[in-house]
Length: 336
Image (cartoon, rainbow, N blue to C red; front, top):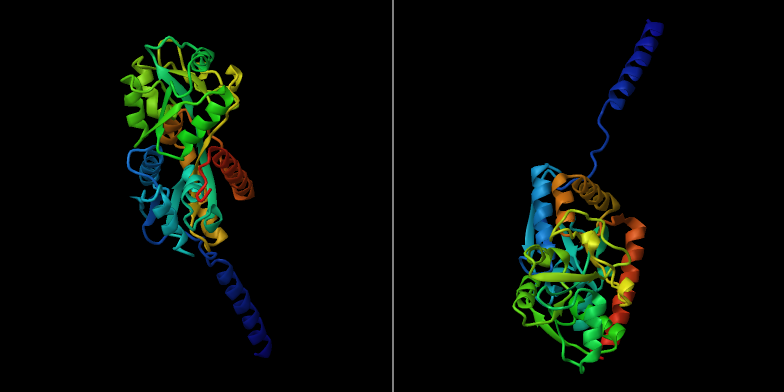
């Protein structure tokens, strides 16, 4: 009987271990309620368009178990949105899409915020900037336009852009430095309005993102002269006649030593776990494989660089230094 009991105990122990090994591992973190997707900019702009496209893709392909809810918080040049995310320490149910105001707003306004107050998740893409003129003007190349600016007195030519002390005006100041002439910068509420003003002949040029002026280019109302990137764009679909995004030369190749790309990235509040960050990195990796995302990238002629982890943090750190230098040169730093 004693021997039988020992065998029985051993069998029971083996069965118990087998049962334990069959238990599922602790489930990986995922959202348990709707995730607020903060847009630190107004409705209809590039960041808002991208956020709502992401919302639609994630819902359509069921990439998250809960909803992504887009909320615009544009007050204080986006400072309202960033401060909201900063104040939600440890909350994994809130993310924010970023653009250059991640750097320009705290530098220009002095609000108590820095990108290091947030948790970097991923770079989704980089947005391009293009030098545009009215298609009825005689300037066929960037060199033609620069020659005209140089031949005229300072402030003769008008550059339109979105907002003051933000990316469009930063590029304009860098452009002025490269050309050696002052222009008159005219701020508008959004890229759509800038494109309308250029078509109407109220300004001489703009530095709109591709997606903000592509319809006017398609209609032969505006002309792209150069792109502020280190390389030409890869998109070869015809847009206007035989021209495509890949037809547009770089501004550097035209003798204008200015490069500028705008971050389209995702951050979370401070104090979230690495597991929670990794969850969203994986969601956005899946987004990048969808046809809807690929179409958005093509429509907007985006630079499709993707980064996460230490590589992304290093890029953001360098981008902040670049913006600080540009804004110091332009006299845009608060209190200076």
